[in-house]
Length: 160
Ligand code: SF4
Image (cartoon, rainbow, N blue to C red; front, top):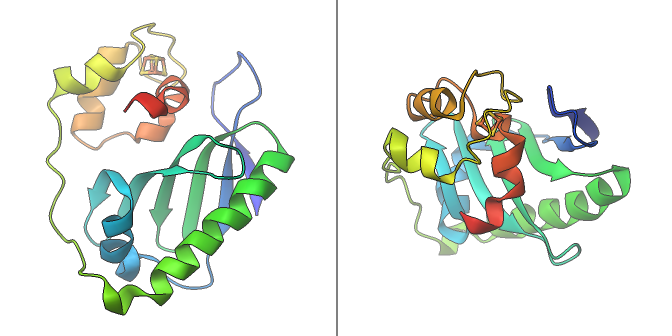
């Protein structure tokens, strides 16, 4: 487990908690999707979903890719510890009962650029590496950037 700074984000210390899995998570994604709110799903490669922690009473965006799990945003190691163990327990239980779930392989309809833009803060802060929020929305629509690159949208994830 480690903390990864969110790039270019200078207003306050924010991190992503990063965990390594012992096995490839991709085959389990269609099952995990049935019990979570999918934000982005790419068959055979990744899932980003919304997850609420009972420990911290906060919502997080969780990204699963192969053997990697990223949770954003967290403030420090204590928060990482609290949510990390809880999320791993959640995933372990979900995977263990996968025989009772009907896998969901339906693609997620990608929202249009302006719909994505509506959810962005429109501050053009450049923390994502793009010049404007509209440029970020356009690249997100094309899956050229990751949702988690915008720390502001992560902070507002409760509203998604
Ligand atoms: S999408 Fe907009 S608010 Fe989010 S990091 Fe990029 S410029 Fe800043």
